Image (cartoon, helix red, strand yellow):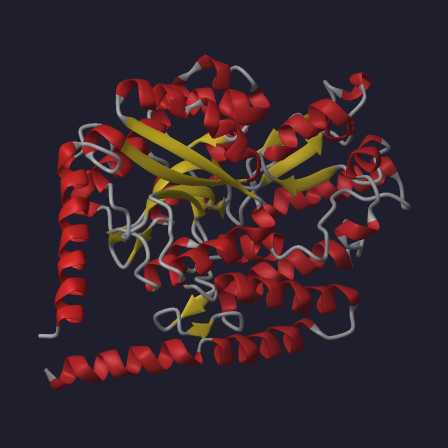
Length: 436
């Protein structure tokens, strides 16, 4: 060995020993001086900084550094951090992103952590929301806050149309929409379904029993009878002049148009609760309400989308024990209620929904009912791209530039092409299984 190599090797050993000493003495990265990196998006990233101080008081020596990331940059930043091996310890993750980061093996499977937890298990959450975090039977995230879609509507107009409450079956609901149309007149509409949103047709498809994807989530199910039934119901709302054939961009101010009765029902999420309270005039604050979505055969079939964000732990975390403790802390019912008061985001824990602060408001309470009737969209990394393409195809059908049959056929062909790699991988897996 040359003297130069020996010297370099000795220095490397010295550096390694120094690093080991720092790790064992509690200096810097030791247990008494742990720094956790927590990434949160948008408004949540601002609000959560007010919550972590309570965690730090309970865990002396653990400091949480919160990085607030705009939603528009979040996905790219997470991917870049994974490629660059600089992921945070804990992160907020939109639950439709969970399959993608699971496929990358970027996030930690949580079954062992849940098995040892005295405070967390699947029964503590809305079942449909919990399901968005389970990939191939393995829990990969813990619901942090939840959202779904339901009906916002003018209850004064519904009453004028002869109804005291929103009907819960498709047939009765459509009759009510026709009655509303008669009340407001031919130049106005019963409901607004923006043609550039994929959510309503997907919801109606799910309500009709469509899995959206089939054959192990490797092929489109848009040509099956269930999705066709839901899509036909969606299209009928435009054919029968109950909804205007316009995009969300063509309505300059949703709240003004709702106030002047241009449309009288709207499928949207919990973020609108604050907007309706703040943007509608005082004279209309008692004139609107929310209701769970109607379904083909009644309330039980009125499912909606399971949305929200989860808390995940990245596999590369050097402090998994403390990272899990932070997830447990932020999942406490009392902390989730505090988070709701600060942000307006609905809590994922069922216990939190027993608090009268949530249940005394009927418009918020309707979300609690709907959240018990939610289902996940297909848990594949390609879903968001599929949803965007679906949005484009749906608008063609509504605008009558293509027939519904043509749209569903073309959409299915394109989605099958997008899922070609998944089919290839699945076939190889099955072939390997047979060989063994």
